[in-house]
Length: 398
Image (cartoon, rainbow, N blue to C red; front, top):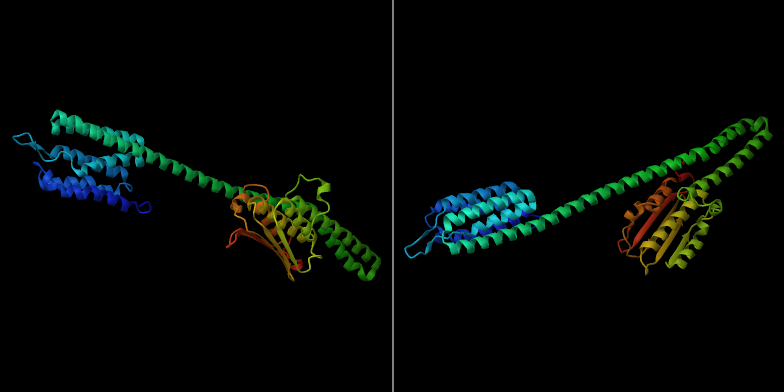
């Protein structure tokens, strides 16, 4: 009924319309049958569309109520018995309309609608009921019914307003989260580009110039060529050290120089696994292939990705969880898989809230021309899968 409101409203209209039609013969009084049926149709029929066009439907029902007030008659026989029924089942549509006006249009419009209903009730009591005892009883009953409809409308309207506000807040939070993620990525890319330009690009330029000079001097002046090659070697080592420092500094600028040297690589993974085990997360480490001669940047990135993934598992997977780490080298790439079997919270949102998280791992893989995926595993738990190129397969850094 919530997904298809017209269906539910049609049921309400039917619950009022069928009894109204069934009591037509005993309710007419001096009212013509055709007019009686027509007024009833305009009382309960519009309820089918009350949530699609609440204000229009409520006003149609109100007008039909006043038409009933003017046209429907009850009379009394010689013994004082009433002929005709002053209240028909379709009249309860007025209460449904009041509820609809309060819940779906607004409190102010609902108060105006209630004032019209009160006016019509007073006129009906004076004009049609006439008997003092019946006036008091029916007026009390009608006021109770309308008061109940108003209270329910207030409650439902408040809940609808709260739900709408919560949905708007969720949308704003999602937009803000996405914006923060985009800003974080842009800032990290800018920092990477600035560091590479200021620290590494100069060394690479020197190496290119020295290599060109060595190629020209190789035949005519071998000693000069040897000096150029020595310079290239020294500059390359310096550039490699700066590159390793850059990758370590991207997320940890507050660390001291002694904390950053030496930089860890795949050879430090067993110690990392042992540290995480000591912290309370059982870790199984599997290393396949030759991981000893990896480029320094690749080895450091593998270490940092595994470190971040295990840290997330330690924080979010739960006390009874365990983790499996697989680092596999093929000819031209490194596959890093970190699985846990915990029940933790969605790490996608946690990673975008600030700090390293998934943004840090993805950017660390992206700067090497690789990729990283993270998400729930089909059998439960969480998986981080990174693919990093090695050697010539790696993307350009500048």
